[in-house]
Image (cartoon, rainbow, N blue to C red; front, side):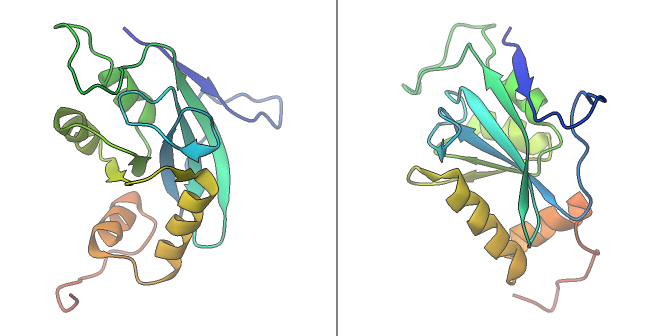
Length: 164
């Protein structure tokens, strides 16, 4: 089984196991190999950079690292060699997951953990992903994001029946 290492900024003597979610923000996980860019498939990501994003700013929460990852060939490993469940467990509490690709079974596990996966066609900087997320929050969010925001408690529950 794959173990997750959590790396977070420590600012005081109290070391919480996982930083608490900031009300009104979205917790975003970004699949990365280098902590600079969104440049990994979900299964092959060595790290996930986790941020809390609001319409005004973002804050780094932690990096979750994995040593034992899948390759990007699309081939499944031997039975019982589960490298996906530990990643999903480590990302619980996140609202959005940005990655280059994610397979159907992995996406199903991510969605059942109440994390919305977003496939991005090309690698891009983490800053660009965060700016895009902030822009979506500032402007009229698409229906899928309004649902995520409502479930996350970042907005009030409204009826969107008259919209769209």
